[in-house]
Image 1: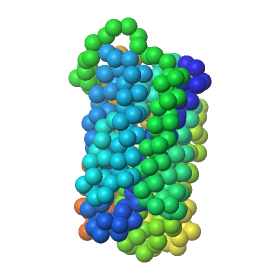
Image 2 (image 1 turned 45 degrees about the vertical axis):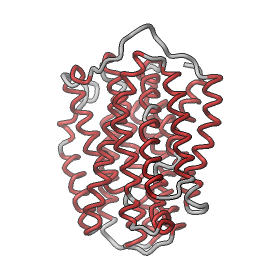
Image 3 (image 1 turned 30 degrees about the vertical axis):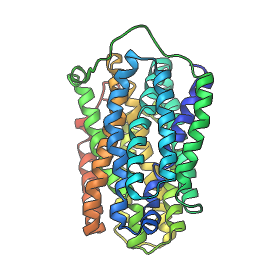
Image 4 (image 1 turned 120 degrees about the horizontal axis):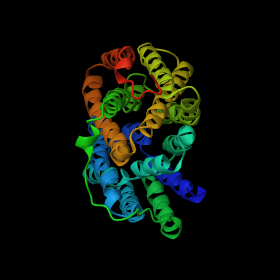
Length: 376
């Protein structure tokens, strides 16, 4: 794989991720602009995540039958236009619709990236490339979160819309074809799930994603309603998760190659559990900042280890595995954000206790989720 091609994938991931995390921090500002409840506006989170998760299931099988270059050109174009629609939306219904469209068409980026890395990078170096690839997403998320505390919320959608259109031009000129002979569009999910390692890893991904997004997507509302913090401080606190996430993805991917995938996954769970327990305490802001740093490291260590495991799965299921990674994460994340909102609306303490308990159970049951003989 050419370095320029890998760079295009990283730039796609960056454009896609610019406002994913920032959306949670923007909920208070959007709610104030449209004079609506924060919990109503919070639907922009799962209205993006659930369609994204369902659509992602189609892209892996789709690029067997169609040139991935053409698929990406169409998807990035529509994704960019939908972001511009969100930025210029005059009411919440238009914003909801735009988020749904960005979810459907943005879902193509990560399956293709994982497929190409798995096919063209040797097993002992995949973790590093995956770390860099997803590190680009956290770099973009960090920038989006930082800017969300400074500029009007509409620009957080306009910037990736305009950047995506510019990137589309470079993709049209420099992205190579990925067509590898004529093959039919075919789902192989039932065949994939006959492999126990596939079932184990995606069961684990489902539960850990549900827990993570059940907390992450309501941090902005928690800081606003429970701690009475302003938009700038909220954005800076959530930004810290993105800052540490850049480091966590790159280092986590490297350690997954050196120490083993499962060890890195467990390091991440332990860090996340510690943070959820600390959020139960009314700690000063500087300690909240430290908690956000550890939270970001925990999630990205877990993420880097799990995604590297995916590339070790049988090659015949590679396309399905790449799609399932995004699909399962975002479907579970959307469900987690929705259920988390219902619980957090009653009591943030109750929500943190439930999520912390779930992480502890997941850690205790990790042996049930061992994925391959290398790790055992």
